[in-house]
Image (tube, rainbow, N blue to C red; front, top):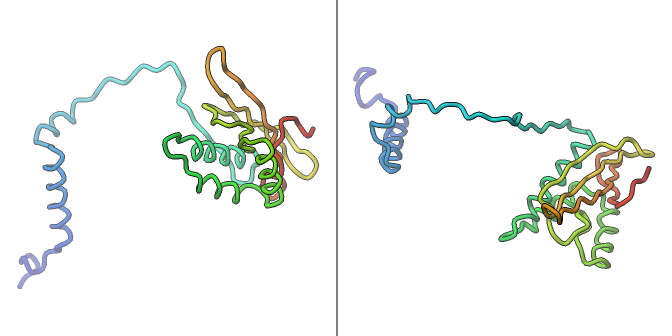
Length: 174
């Protein structure tokens, strides 16, 4: 047998090519695709600058933004909210002592303590508010509703030096 005989060919490569062909046929791809792919659509005119989000590990504002973004996503799926994820996020980002105080506050007020609301905001912004004692304060502005019914409450989130949330209030600690 020589190197080019069928016994020495790599079966994985043949299987990959065959799988690709099956997928192409299954998706209805034809030889027209290569001709169509060479036609480029004109670029869309956009007046808005591309949106970007950045962060740095260890920064309080990034930590709070990460928490609120993930928490709102977990709670915001009205057809299937992810209660397990919301609970896990709380355990990860909140100190145990604050989580206990927050649970008591929620029971008393019958509302979500992280959002200070019974529903989920459509938008939010997170802004650094500077050092407070041994921690750092971050302002979270939540946007509920739209048009004339828009409400934008501010929450003041206190982060300890080990990047865990130790308090969420409606007034600044400053």
